[in-house]
Length: 257
Length: 200
Image (cartoon, rainbow over all chains, first blue to last red; front, top):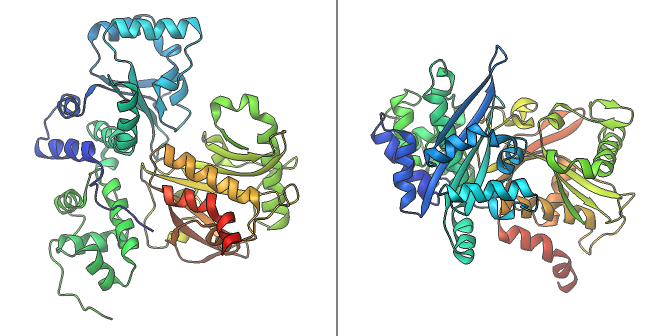
């Protein structure tokens, strides 16, 4: 059994998180695009539609697509035929655009027009679903040859899925009246494991102290990292300390109980 | 034959989905005595309305052999909303790279074939479908609540997992939760087990 606790494999998520932590005022989309460029990613798009208590549909769209395409898309209400939107909101498997059936003429034309506006051929859309059952979509768009696209997907699919979730949390946190999200509640075990991490203990040492298996410790850390919306253990400690979720120092442990 | 059925391709797979709800009623309500709601011989719950993804094994001619249900742990799912006791003082799991599997069932009347390791061939195919789908989607782990009887089968079949919850009694069944590794090595285990069993 192996559980990845640090986000070491999630390179783009890590960079995104670091950038946002350093600069709270940073525009998250612009920041993300800067990072994406180094990985060959041209565009990012985030879309979310949620029904409010009053029954209205509130949409949030953040995209780096050229304005001309964005306007055209809205004007023609393309979300009604866009297969990515049609597929994604009630599904949770990532969608590789190259697997979309373009035999239908209006779908074929839709992709043709997107391409004329500078949208690249390759893309992945990650469906997002949160605990309030709000659904969203997060897409990356880039140019790649068939073989390198395959490699890119293999290497970065998990990373982009994690990134989608981080981005969604950031957008939610940025909204007024959504305080519940900004202070995630940690369980006793999670707090304990994180406090030992803050005290500089490795997963192995923490496992010895708490009489747990090392994998179990790694698992709690991994869960904490996701809950706090960060990308690795160090960031989790920093955020938890800042929120007062964990105490700064721990008394000398009694090892070998 | 493995099928992945979600909201979008449900239309063409109503037959399998119906058989799945009937199998679930027989297995969970009649045989194992779970307190699940059965209507007209179909077991359907709240989470079936949450746009899950079903992994289904059929004989290729419309007969259902086995099925399970997947939900992302970032959204509503059973471990956080139905079985929080299993996790005790541990955490509710919400992670974009962890899915939850539930309603695991195999129709042992419809499929009587067993491998040399005494694992039903439909069980093995279902598990392979689960881990291949998860691996393709970039998932790192699966969590699941199961009873101790199922745990023994999972262990023998070649799944790699750890318990993350304590053992709790629900409807007289000893139930616990586990976290499963999603990897090529697990998929290999599930594919190779029969050969291994014959060669050892």
